[in-house]
Amino acid sequence: GRPFREAGGGGFSALSPMDIQAYVGFKLLQCGGATTGTSGKCLQKSATNNAEMADCHFDHGSKQFTWFGKMLRCHDEVCLRRLSDENVIFDYCNNDDGVGNAAPAADMYWNFDGDTIKHVSSNKCLQCGLAGDDANTDVRMFTCDGSVYQKWRYTIPGY
Image (cartoon, rainbow, N blue to C red):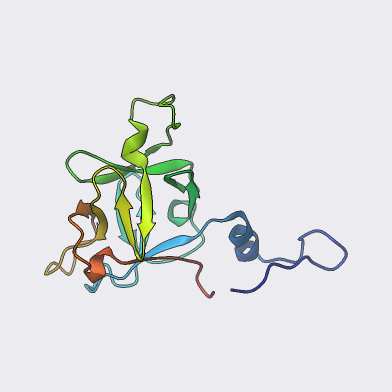
């Protein structure tokens, strides 16, 4: 990527919005899925707080993510959460001490393992779409198998 630079005269007024957002750490999560439903698409928070795949644009807070401790926080101030049925939703970010909403904080703990995103307690991988179902844009948890549906890039378009 381009090095962060200060605009002439001090301050950051000459930077583009993308430069500013890159500076504060928000990026897109792009999946390597091979189907037409997921190929090159990015993780997005739907209007109903479900995790889904959509075209990659950096102009929506629902597609911008940053690490918040062990949690993946959306610019819309909610975190990625694994449910017991392996569905993935967005919920209010919980504190490590469990104070916050009724969601256990551990449901929101993730880590990057190479190019996969693993849920800390289940050790399952975040997957976009389903092999053999070209239209599927769901995001769910599956046993890690190294498929392209489980490969993610934490990126900024154009960088």
